Amino acid sequence: MARAGHIRPAVSARALRIGLIIVTYDSVGVLAGCLGSLEAGSEGVDLADVVVVDNTSSDDSLRVAKEFNSRPVQTVQMGRNAGYAAGVNAGIGALDIGALDAIMVMNPDTRLRAGSLAILGQALNQPRRRYRGAEARVHPDGSLQLSLRREPAIHRALAESILGRAAARIGTLGELVGDPDAYEQAGEWAWATGAAMLMSPAMVAQVGKVGRSPFLLYSEETDYMLRAADHGWRLWYEPRAVVEHIGGGSATNAMLASLIAINRVTLFRRRHGRAAAAAFSLSVLTGEGLRAIAGRRPSRAAFAALMQPSRRIRELPA
Image (tube, rainbow, N blue to C red):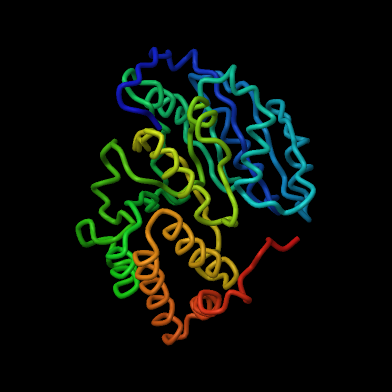
């Protein structure tokens, strides 16, 4: 992300020194593929450090990282399932960010396409910009993955509650950017899903930790990107840099669906007045209620969590 008026000398893509963080939790099925993509993905840059932060996986994720032979991998053990943002912060703490031009953060179920880090680095280090780079996200079969978002707003929450994902295809009505043509153009956006993101060390030093209480797992990256924007940084989307993302089961998992709904409301409440926050909360509640009536189990859990604070999740399961 970059601030208007700030001039930073351009850095050659081949001279860029990048540190990379991967946060794992029971990721043995995908981690080797992620690590295996780094050689081609880092063509044209100096991938100085690779840190794998493990949230106390019950599988062999940590062993896969330690036994990866293509390049040295530093491992950090969290000692508990602390969540994605805490893992990112631990990874940043393991890096010498003062010696880096950029920090790449990745989910273990992502894979870099050839040369993607160099392309992102070029976008990040343009003169007269203070940008945090974003990348084009695709499914493993090459189909587009919708990852860009507009600023959260009451009318967008209401539209998505009533129309679902169809709202994304109607102009700027939805928070989710659903027009495929928008993903063909480089440019600024409010935020993007955080499965893979390149960050400026200067931004990290100024904005601080990625997550903060009470966010847990979801809305952490949204909160961070919006806080960065408060400091004058901007998200830059670069479609030439491609990352494959397998994706998780948040749409079908009741616990994760509850966290998404709760954190969306909490994030909006933190950034707006009480009346606006109440309207936003009602819009989200309406959407989850409609989908619960239609028989969608995750929405029933989300609706219950929104209505009854005692049913909300306070920490991630071990």
